[in-house]
Image 1 (cartoon, rainbow, N blue to C red):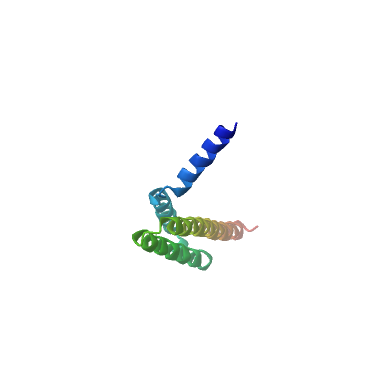
Image 2 (image 1 turned 90 degrees about the vertical axis):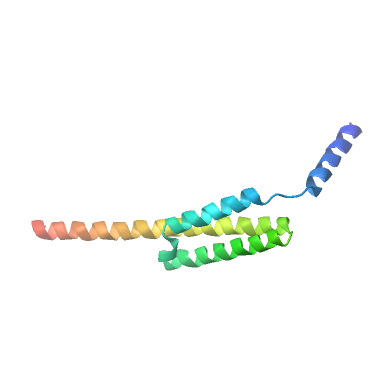
Length: 116
């Protein structure tokens, strides 16, 4: 039993000391920022601030990667992904609200034309 615990502890120490590869997180964060842009996040005040923050986190992470600090870069990449996801969600919501308002206006116009 002691050997198993020692082996597990040794394995955890080795994994903890291994080099962290930020490449998957970098790709995910970049994709999240691009998705937010595609959703029109730059066009709405509520989402444009979040998009700008995501881009700052992404740039910071890229600098940290170049500087040889992948652990800190991964934290920044996580923040970038989260901010970009929030920006995309807010942009999608704003787009949907605009569509609803447009449809309401069309309905009101049709009712006026029909005399109702």
